[in-house]
Image 1 (spheres, rainbow, N blue to C red):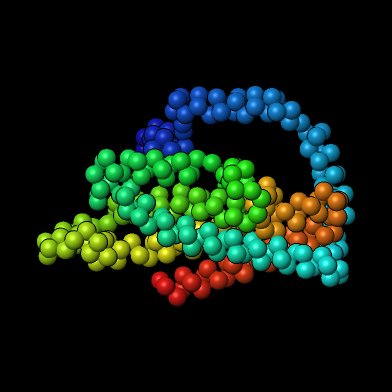
Image 2 (tube, one colour; image 1 turned 90 degrees about the vertical axis):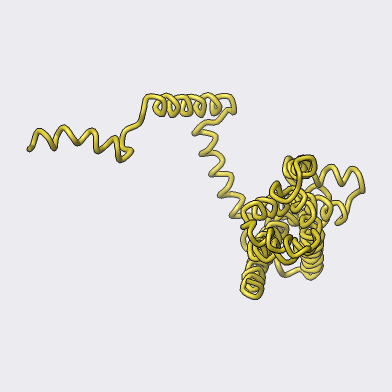
Length: 271
């Protein structure tokens, strides 16, 4: 009995996934080797990391206490925060509205291939670049200001919401769609009465999440000239006003927390 149990242990361990195949071992070794190789190319060292920690400690010491006492800086920070909030709300609203038709056109169970492929290509194009890169392009196109930030975040919103909306439509039950079609309904009625009721909850979740994301990204697009608090933050860094930088960062964190609470209330209200 003891021999049988001892012989079965390696088999049980392998069945439980405690041993790796030679392919998996080689894959892990190649991954470790590439990580070491990349670290050597990027001049990463423990010494530089330790020096960075010292510099970070010095920076944090210069950031505290945060500067909230000057009225002119408070007003400047408040205007930047309000502009970031407006950028986030407007870009989310337009992005959500535009994502609806794009997501429907990209759904392969509703549309033919010659429609879905261009729609999915457009979504992929919107998702290909970070909002900061898109904001730089719009700043070059329409100039500095909030418009460039709004357009950049609209593109980001379409790339996120339209993709997930199309995937949600592709997962619906087609029985309701066929039943509504059998009644002689046109395509819009099929969408309203058969498709949207099945994806409504998920779409609201996508929209509220994108609002949170745009609220965070609206603080970044200003760094490249897209309006909002980001420009104020960059200027404070350029003047080495680290106590004012800390005040701006605290205000941004507070705004994001308030936005998260509002998003939770919206989910509870509509879902």
